[in-house]
Length: 315
Image (cartoon, rainbow, N blue to C red; front, side):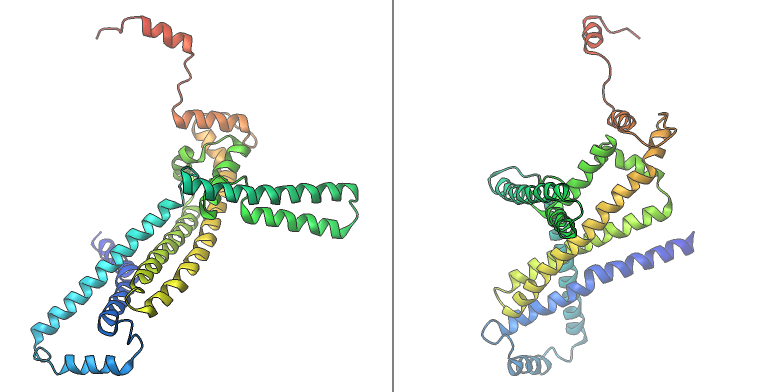
């Protein structure tokens, strides 16, 4: 047990150092450069060298206590920056689940919905043309491209202001349409039935989603720092699109794995809940699974009304 705890501690320290301390140290160094150089001398090596020489020749240069205090302050600043970036990353992840309600989010969701409707109309037109002439390879390619353009917007009709939010929402919709299972409430039960390998794949995909969100947090911090030191703005401008692309890839993989978990182990969930499922999982059985995991009240209203009129039994 002691060896296990020691190894676990090492892994946690390693992950914390890689995810928080090292990026935080880079950001803390950028903050120091922003304070020393500013906008006018942002890339002036002479100004940086002069500041370094003055620091080395200062009265506190040979003091071990001063060096220790400076190093501790730098590390604390790096850790604080890492915690702030992680918090911003959590906020970014939270925005992925926002619905298209409100003036701003509603307009964004409506815009995505209009784009999807135009793409869906193009798919229907291509399919009608292909049905009229099934042997034309050009029409077959046109149909495939139209379907790919529609899927690039969303796999189902959009209902979220962002692509990432819609991809996660599409997984819920597709599972419910196919099996009648509410994935939001059924997922914790399904997770308990998954084998270790499947859990590992899902956990790795979820970690990649979190890493993309943290990168977005760092990008926002560097963009803010760019108001005082323009090279930091360059870093932020590069980091934010990269984080967006990584988030799309990670969320797409995670959503596909979640749907695959239902495809492969949804029947096991029904059996574990005591439902007869000798063959493949059907929508009727999936709706019963949803009713069980939601703890839906299946007592008829008349019985509830009658029970409400009777006094409760005394102990």
